[in-house]
Image (tube, rainbow, N blue to C red; front, side, top):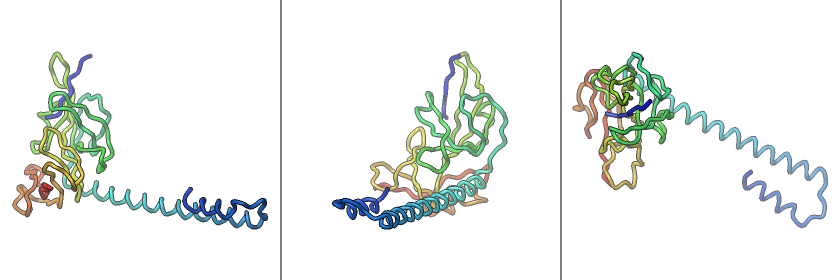
Length: 215
């Protein structure tokens, strides 16, 4: 069936080796001490890594909760799509508007650029202020499902929204204009409260404030 896809060990081990190198033998107690020290270092490293991962996950969850609250996610109205995502998930969209591809991606990461705010049989059923939508249709005509999409903004991160498809980009060192998300304003129908401008969603009444970076 033809389908068109459209988008509108660490340094301590080295020290142990140096201490032992050149020796013809070592006592059991010395080796036990080395082993115990290495085990303690490894355990501390694992604890530190686990704490860092937990902190990063908590920060990501907080961002996602704030974004989902602002976006006012729409119900799943159905549709038959080749990509397995749910409302609230994120995707990496690529290609062009007339020849798009979409893959599931973790929200708020370099791998994602859009958040699924709704699903519907056709793109016309998406909320009117959705940033974009992705739909699939049979070559013989007729949509078979659509994803309603918002840009997957992360406060402090940048997006290039100058092309057909939004792209997550570094905030520093770019050659094209980038938009850095600074704030999400609720109960807003325009960008008047954003000092540097922003992207309003009047139907759902929230605005993503941004600042434009050009160098």
